[in-house]
Length: 86
Image (cartoon, rainbow, N blue to C red; front, side, top):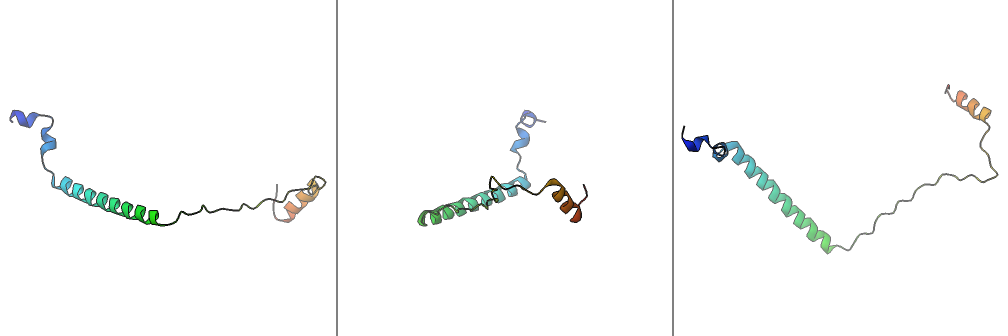
């Protein structure tokens, strides 16, 4: 072994065919993503700005101060009648 072979960087200087293929595939994917991003940004720049979609929330029925819910005994009877056992 020569002194050059013993250096810590010697193993990284060797050309690995698998690494070359991976690097080429990575570069192709990265270039394609950059091209698509540029096209998307150009398309969005030409469009009028979008308004944010407003979502209406369904409100629960508000009880009036004078109204009360069903009595506990009635509620329990309806739960048992509905097939629930507590």
